[in-house]
Image (tube, rainbow, N blue to C red; front, side):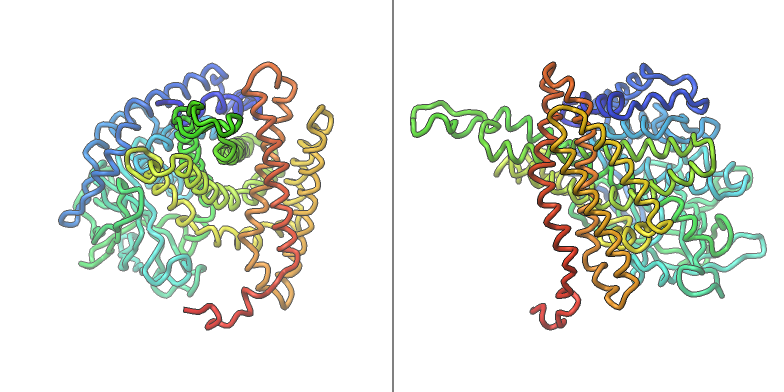
Length: 598
């Protein structure tokens, strides 16, 4: 059912009332678009997700992928949906039309993607990775490379991956051992092994393009010596035709908790000495290219956590309205009182409100960051472009980690609403929970995002980027102060924002002191503080718009009530977490290893 993938009324509220997203249509780059086309495209995405993608969700999970003789077979039901997805030109919505994309704003693609990911995330990984591989080639490839690869990737004719991780070098990419040797014809021969490669082998596309991080022989140690290579599964001839199979093979697939319909592969390169690839960009530029991609990748992973959350919440809400159990508290001890829907019970309502607050806040946050990408594209000056790029850079570690973690927690609460039924395959929340968990682990674990936040992002431009962001929050607070019923909530958000800034500056100072390890022990709690503050900001912003209309519909009243709940019930907990960070207790660091027991 459509309403169990995404809440279209709330999507429209965020797009058109909160963010006024169709203003981007005034820019010549998006000429021809207007609110009507926004609504039409989202409606088409919704219809396609329901009719073609959603039926593959449980079926694909139960069939899973099969590894046979070095080949991976995806679930049979994926083939028709993938073909129709390609024909509908959904593969690369934001990419240039001339290169096979639709040239749409990020915010519009974000709204459409919510339906696709909500219907079946494992299915959408095949498209997301092809688009991501193409983006790197679009930004750093030579003209012949762009001509050879881009349209095939953006159209979905070829698949894509990203080969980073190695057995001895998980998140520590500077320790990778895959090597590259330059050949007389300008190509490179690669040798090495990669693990945890999403969709490294599949039978949906005729070819797969593997961007591979490797170290050219004689290159410096560490990340400075890493280069990036385009390694196709089937060699591509200069005229674009396919040649012989390349010496890159899948050696196995992982048995995983979730996303069973997406293969997680181990890959061997050059086991026969015949793996060839093209250098992308310059030698030793591999990490720079990767960092250019990180903001979009992190936003996509945060979106994954959010989409599972909104789907799980809607299933729980629907179940709570239909499931009759127990008696209304008002009935007292009357044994003949009728059973009531469990949404009547205070504790169930508490769980639903907690879920709704986070789902609504995450939708607004993710859509907001998407608009920053569009505003950066349309920026009229280099200074404005840099300012927006820095804001994106500061916010994306929080979006990735917070939405991944809270998204999973929403799934846990949704299962709790279902009770014992939620733990069975009879209802979909069991699979939604399993599929969601990976978001907090891959593309940099939550802890790595937190260390990036306090180690690199808080100090950007000596704290000016953080000040610019908190200035945006202050603008919302100022608007809320002028609206009856919101001034007290505005005061709380303002107080939390100022306290967060104080803590951030203290962490930045401590990192440069002999106690430099302490801030990193509190890095994830601080990231969660920023995430909670972003939720409060987004929900207060929603309330500013909804409060004048609260008497006209339950939807608008719900916006104000949700903001009140989060700001009065959750934000005080956040304030307590900030005080714990401020204490800076070093027990985590000074505990003897043996003191952990075991």
